[in-house]
Image 1 (tube, rainbow, N blue to C red):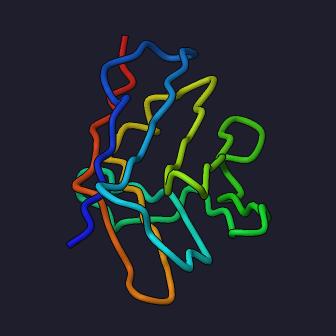
Image 2: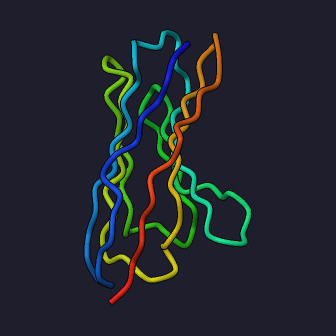
Length: 115
């Protein structure tokens, strides 16, 4: 069973930056899409950004220009650089990997943006 583990979350002041990482417990074959999602308290999980195996990226409109998604397909790893963080970015961030043999979710990492 593949496990995804996120890291890099924490407490940051408004305007600060964080870099989230997601690592798989073993290589995942036939990946076609990887992404970050987030869930704020009392809200539904929402898309943050996705990246295809070919490198095409997609971002939530409200996050364009502040967040950057990247991946290392060979390592089945995913990253999210978050800049100019705002209090409304506070949420649990989840990584997701879609492959032709399964869809995988991490357990989430908490990001709190507060002064």
